[in-house]
Image 1 (cartoon, rainbow, N blue to C red):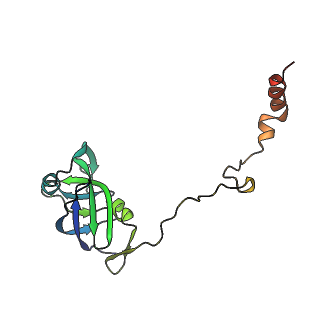
Image 2: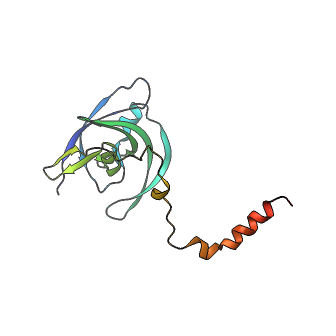
Image 3: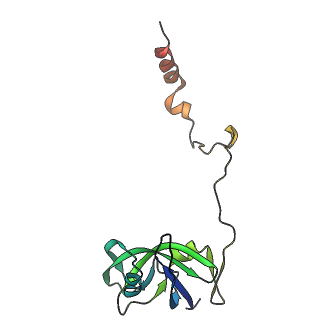
Length: 158
């Protein structure tokens, strides 16, 4: 599909958000998390909540980086997500989880596009026929109706 970059802004989550532009970041759906410069994240006061998280690079090297939480936006897209405190030499990447948080899709014409409505759970209670649990075996065969009757018989006063 090819690589492309988009302009990104970040902010520390809270009541008074102060957005800071980071310039272009590579869109990489192969990276789980978003990687942003450590200096920029610390300057905004973004806290580390996971220290020395282990990662494996594309060439198989194991490294550790700190991880924090930031607000991320680009054009009409905005989300809150985990961000890796990238060190000098690390790429600036917009990862798959941030793309999902944006509810965006990667378009072959090298851009992000809106993903459409987000699926949600039904608000109504299902009827008996629409029960979510449908056993793959007959419960009477395994538990027996006589067992149920014995339990009921014990519960009755003499």
